[in-house]
Image 1: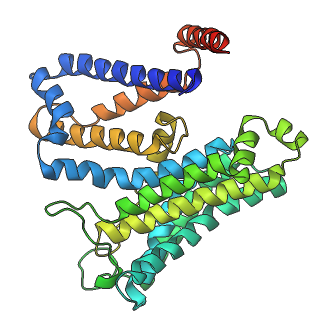
Image 2: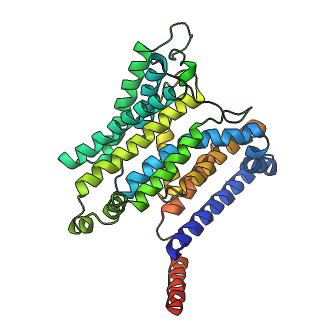
Amino acid sequence: MHSESKFEVIRTLVAILIALLLAFIIILFVSQEPITAFLKLITGPFSSLRHFGNIIETAIPLIFTGLSISVMFQANQFNLAAEGAFFIGGVVATIAAIHFNLPPVIHPLVAIVLGAVAGGIVCLISALLKVKWNASELVSSLMLNYIFFLLGIYIINYFLRDPNAGAMVSYQFKDNAMLSRLIPRTRIHTGLFIAALCIVLMYLFLYRTKWGYALRMTGLNQSFAEYSGINTVKVIIYSQLLGGITAGIGGATEILGMYNRFQWQALPQYGFDGVIVAIIARNNPVFIPIAAFFLAYLRIGADIMSRYTDVQNEMVAVIQAVMIMLIAAQGFLAKYRHKMIVKGAKQHGKLS
């Protein structure tokens, strides 16, 4: 690991420790049992197999949206339509899960592929608006989230709603369409393997292909990339298309792995959580699962803390905010970064 990457890892860990320290100080002032509350936050997620399973279950969709956001951010495209792509991916997978009749393994795969296509379309619209009319992908993607949310809700409530369910939910999925569970007494499903495969493929794409190189160079300096002969228009399009496909896979996987019918009546917020995951992971696919696991661990720990003590689970929002501010602040540990680079350069000079 070279000096720059090593520094980013250290800086992220320091930011996390500072955020946790600040959380403890706040708990100290607001709680009647601060030690118990903090211990529940830190150790609660590992107190039982069910709680640990909750971490993995929560981390799976965060991996998909984190990957989705990170690939677009690496191209310097601030597309936040992963939320809409995730949601519509779940809707399209629901259609396939209810109306198709396929063998056990083929059925969920077909549903997930269709969800991926739907998710790709969501982010592709922002990309085409960007290259055609120079429309801000940030603004257009935020608007598209709600357009596709309302479209999805319309499809579910008017064409797929089960009138006998007593709630605004879809018909039940066919058994063949659902992803199988991996560990008894948990809801960890085979979507974990799909997430792992996406991590590997995304890493290989970004760091072992010419298209990934072009994407990263465009993100670092678009003018230089154009001068070097890179078609940045294509990069802008396929970076956002790939991000949408990944989010769509995530939505389809989450629906088929965690539910037996479509139940969302609001945006699930996994796309926006993916931004946090991508920031913590510094847009590196290798660190995405670690960041997703950590965020899921905090969420489950905060939930356990709120159930057993007098501290509300909103405490996790404070930890997230502090972490993001410190990780995003370029001046945070800047002097230490300079020293590390100088030291690494000197060692390299001695070796050569």
